[in-house]
Image 1 (cartoon, rainbow, N blue to C red):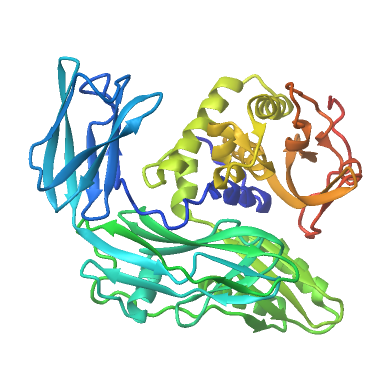
Image 2: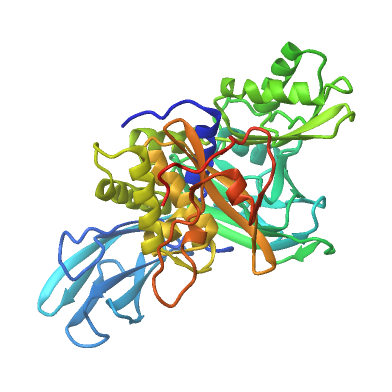
Length: 512
């Protein structure tokens, strides 16, 4: 697997690769794990299930079967798991398996004179995570501190210091589904997380329990940022459980138990001072920091930080803003996730979620089908563009339509999904690609929108796949927004002017 060129802009796309869909709020970890190989019988779609005691529910389907006739299912030990009929769909008859107590058993399944078995393991209930609110609305600038309770398998709440240790140790992972475009997410000195409204839109703040490198459950808060609204939320507790597989959530004795408070403000007087203090900002994982500088030198210090950003491998994206003469500028920082980034670079996807793996597999399949070594960068990007236009339908279907999985797997996406899919495909092709957000103007209306910039033969161009795929009763493929200049795109697009976005001064000479 080739390594991509190290540029600020190449690091930005990693956020796009990872911004897959957010699971439904309040979803329990129903199937802890499942092996779906049809190794025992072609009509049975699962060979083993791993469930969570009391809250774990798995299912399997007998392909092509109806609800009656020729089906017999019996647990070897009915005290460990029970089976019930769940309905029939186009695939066949589905049965629900519920974990009752910790242990292992098997299900004997007979159908149409044939037999197979399913291994079932039920793990003890490992604990729960509860957020105080399922959704919260706020105006830009409003603040909401998320309340969270984590319990162990006996239902005892962990102390605040223990929860802080989980965050520090990586067994409690907190993330923003829109990577800072809607809200700022900041960790406070006490370990809790603060959400500050930024731009109108919707995102999810996701709390994940991590064991053995993978998320075993999550709880999330939907955040709606709207202009002029009174802040408030629905105080319904959102609780999710996970299984106890014998892996500790709390660091072992002697491990660090302190959290570095997020740094919200620094004062610098020289370039070296800026770089030294910014490293401390990164170590505290601040998502936003006000940088105080000598008055009148805001632009110079901002430029220095942006020019030096390649020194900081942990940074995916850095956005800055300032007011002349204010004596400060603000930096918004998005960090990478090393394990997931390396999974893409090296093809080691075992640590990724099932949805991440599904998306990556689909992208690799598309890449293999479309690209051969003789193709130019222009031909590769054109192939990706045309593939997405021809196979994806513009449709809002929930969180997946805002992610690459919606475009590449479901075939249904909105602009976010188109953009992230092209970003991922270009990543696999070692072509520099960025996600740009802003506003699109059409028919006298304006709305939030997103598109890409790609680098072809050393020159940057704009690509808006979504607007080249208009909603129509018959398929339409056009290239109006394929490899065009900033001036041409600017006739009906407006983007947020971050000084480090690359310019696209010309249309591609052979654009269609």
